Image 1 (cartoon, rainbow, N blue to C red):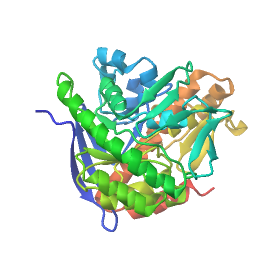
Image 2: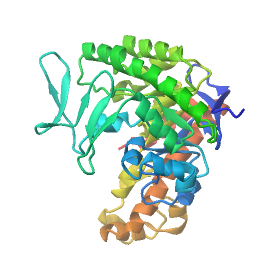
Image 3: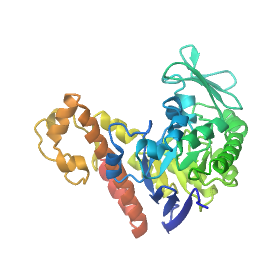
Image 4: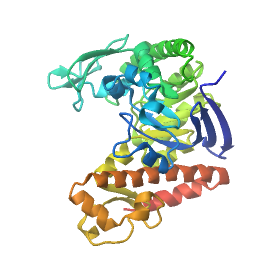
Length: 400
C-alpha cells in the first residue's frame, strides 16, 4: 500500500537543531530544507507551472479558502485533483483555510477591538469578518458576500477534494493582540480539539477515497509568544498520529528562532516541520537553525510584482531612474531565466509602463533567489559551513 509520506533525516548540524532530509510523497521527493512557493488559486501569479518548475521549486502550496470559493473543490476533484487541474507534477501542499476565514473573512484589513474580557472581536467598520465558536467559523465570502461555514471536517473534505499531497489540520488563528487567557482557551477549546477532529476525518477520507493517492496531514502548533503554550501545543500534537507538523500562528519576528526551537524541542524528531508564512532571509536562517524543514510565503512573488527584486545586497527597486539606461543583467551572478536574458533597463521599462511581462520576469527572479538561498543553506548544513555562511550572507544582505 502506498504511503502518504515518508521522511528521512540525512545530515544534522552540530550545535543546532538544523538538519537536511528528504520528504517522499506520491508525487515525488522534497529535499529539505526547502522553500515552497505559494500558488494561491492553483497558480503562482504571473508564472506558468513550467516557469515555476524552472526556478528550482520542488513543490508548491495552494490555498484551500480560495479554491473552495472558486472553482470549488468538487470541480478540482472531477479534474483528477490539483496536479492534473493546474498541470503541476510535483508535490503539493494545501493550507486548511483557517487563516483566510479568520483574517480575510470579508476581504478587508482586520481591526482588532479588545473587549472588556480580553477576547478580541475582529471587526471591519460595524461588520464582523468572521464569527468563531468552539465548533468552527462562520464567515462571509470576499467575492459575493455569501455566508459559509468552515469546521475541521469541512476543511478536510475541501483539502481532500483538492488532492494535495500534504494537508493541514484546521486551527484557530490567534494574534499577538490576544490575551494570554484567550490563547489558553483557544488551544484547549478549539485548536487542539479541532486537531483531533481533523485527524479523524482525514483518516476516514483516506480510506474512503482509495481511488486517489493517499494524502498526509500536518497538525498545526499554536501558542503565540508564550513558551509554556508553544511547548504544551507541540507535546499535545506530537503524541498524535500526524505525518508532520505546521509551525503556525502569530509570533514576534525578533524571537522567531527562539520560538521555533521551543516547538521543535518537543515535536517528534522523525517527522517534518513546516514553517507557515516565512520567506525573509534572516527568518529563514533562524528557523532552519532551530529545526524547521520547509517554508512557504507569498512575499517573493508579491514584492516582485511591485518592482522589488532580491539581490545578495538586499532588495532593489527596479523602477529607480538609475536603471533607465543600465544595460547589464539585473544580477550578473544569478542563474535565473530573467537575469540570463534581460537587462536592468528593460525591466525598468516594463515596470514604468505597467507591462505585465515585468511581473513575470521579476517573479521568476525572486522565486529563484529564495529557492537557491535555501538550497545553499541545505548544502552548508551538509558540509558544516552553515554558521559561516549565515554570518556572511546576512552581513551583506542587511548592510544597508
